Length: 209
Image (cartoon, rainbow, N blue to C red; front, top):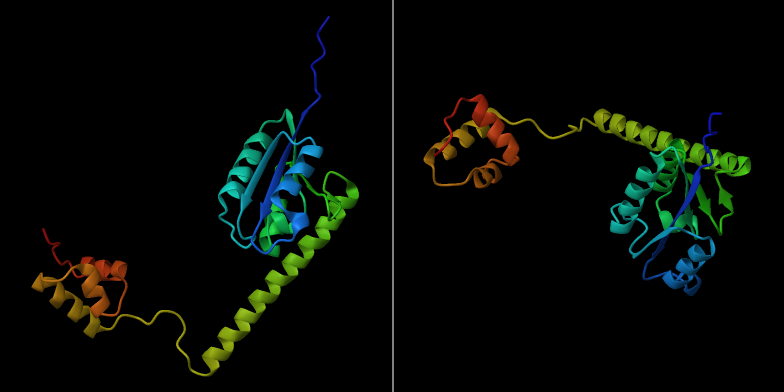
């Protein structure tokens, strides 16, 4: 008789808590951590930092940990937060982060906002949020496009101005004097250091030793 394989998945709950200086008392780190403990979280990440900073240390650690757990098919992973704005105060970052996690099979729960993407209602609500995000992205692109078109109509030159022949000659002349660094020469020629190196190479100028 073949032994039946145990298909039951392991439920892993990860909590994320964040506060910044302007947060109210009910959003204190201690209160948030307590709520995560009540949710039986296996691991809780917490930190002080702005919700508009996408490079928060614990935030990045949490995402890396969750993605690693989600790659194991034996796990059912939940990310739990006190409120949406604890994850991010930037709407686009919030939606994109949750979408990325959902694609990996991670469920998202916001306790105060009553969102649980493991339920049908929660998924529908999040789809509505996603549509608002897409709408805002499209609007931003359209506004940029209109702005560029208006600038062109007024005869404005868009983008970084091209390097003139005079600038190239000055670059080569100063470089051959061997008295200034390439960074200093680039500043005097009003160009980026990388651009200076590019034009020196194109002109087959032998590098200094």
